[in-house]
Image (cartoon, rainbow, N blue to C red; front, side, top):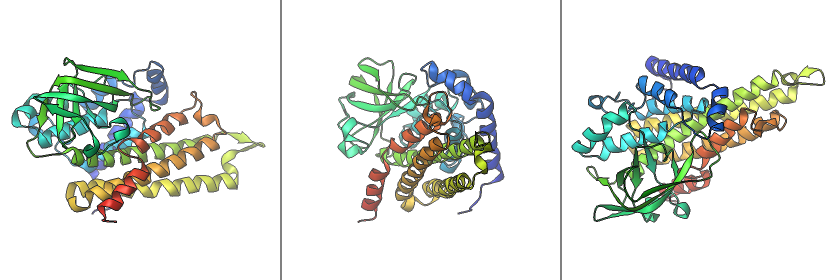
Amino acid sequence: MEFGLSEEQDLMQETVRQFINQECPPTRLHEIFNAGEGHDGRIWQGLADLGLCGLMLPEKFGGAELEVLDLALVCEELGYGAFPGPFMMHSLAGVAIAKAGSSSQQDLWLPQIANGAQVATLALGEGANGWECSEWSTEVRDGRLHGIKDFVSHAALADLILVGLSDGHFAVVETGAEGLSVESQDGIDRSRPISRVKFDGVRCEVLNESGACVQAIQDVGLALLAADAFGAASRLVDLAVEYTKTREQFGRKVAEFQAVKHQLARLALEVEPTRALFWYAAHALDHLPIEASRSVAMAKAHISERGIEAARAVVELHGGLGFTWECDVQLWFKRMMFDRTYLGTPEFLRERCANLGGL
């Protein structure tokens, strides 16, 4: 692997960061979250105009036909900016249709997903049954979908929901279909509101052109969550540095105290080296499939765990102010908590790594 990004990748990241900084500063985030929306249509359209909604989709459908690493780099920037919107799940849904959909299914949905005109999301978790499709009960009988999914991100906003089935396939449903109901759930991250979605005999189409692909899409999702978590953790470190340079105690800037300098240095040392983990995990998905499943699980487990530890330290450096609603730190702390839990906690993922290694 080349341990460095190409000029095009650097430019793409810089473009996304500039866009988020301009269109979605913390003041705008507070406005969006106070409104209880977790989404801004203008910002979403801006991402679509940049060509990001179809980053991994075939060019013939309006996509850029890039790789998982490229998508992960975008997710890093969205994590750094605490972007409020369905980008990650939307991208994963598009990849699933491109991977397992028939020609007619791809023609129907992918152009609208690539240009952002239709919003798609994933429905995977099932309460106590968690994230393993072998333990799910959602199934299709006689062309009708039956089951309940929890923790569905931006379900109320989506036009399409890709539902993970117990046999490892995906079913696609339109959110206006009869028999589908969406119930908001309590979630800590307001940039990604979650819902319980019930399917009571809902008409659907199954994606089964290339066999079961739920696990493959979950692996991509783990890499993207790891990238998002790294971006959020990096922002938390930057916020700590900025704040300690302005906060004063005993007539001096807090950052001038040696103990605080050591704490900031330790934060950077815990967070920055984990960048290589999500780079390698995404690279493995693109080019080293035999290593991919274990690499993405390890990356997401380690980065999200380090990120939570960093978030706690940053709150302390803010003197306890960090988790109040008025302070920006809580935005990224809560995002880290979502990234840590979605698709499996570090403990769950380490057990999965052990099983993959035959231990």
